[in-house]
Amino acid sequence: MEATPTLVAGIIDNIRRMFQVVNEQSKNAVHETGLTGPQLWAIKIIAESAPIKVSDLARKMYLHPATVVGIIDRLELRELVERTRSTKDRRVVEVALTLQGREKVSQSPEVAQGLLVNGLEALPYDKLINISEGLELLVKIWGVHEIPPQLILSPEVNLPEKE
Image (cartoon, rainbow, N blue to C red; front, side):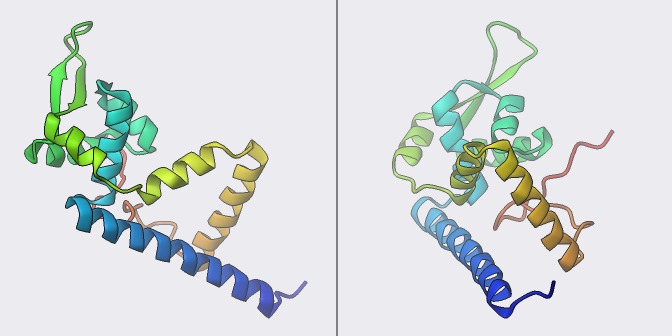
């Protein structure tokens, strides 16, 4: 069956909408907080779960731990988070917000990544499969399988740790 112009136009418009909302929310986050979307998303998750292990934060953000460590490094330089050794297991480092970090979270807008993850996690498995297959097709159409996944509107790349 041949693609109809109406279906193609609808798909392209929906992709435009997605880019538009991510772009607008990212601009708002930087304007209102001075943080990138991933940094803001990280402190929002830390605020909900602190103290939290880096591996748990990475899991909640669907990022590799090495990527999250870079985000935490930058947040720590801005004195928004602090790392401490777990009292239960001294080998484990936990992350929590500083007073300044808690203030930043209370004044911050929602982030696109958080909305996306929350929405996807709420979907039934069959819907997730449909979305995954559709996105795989779009990636194939664009020929971008080999491009490392860069965080949304951020220079950081989500790469696994080198073995």
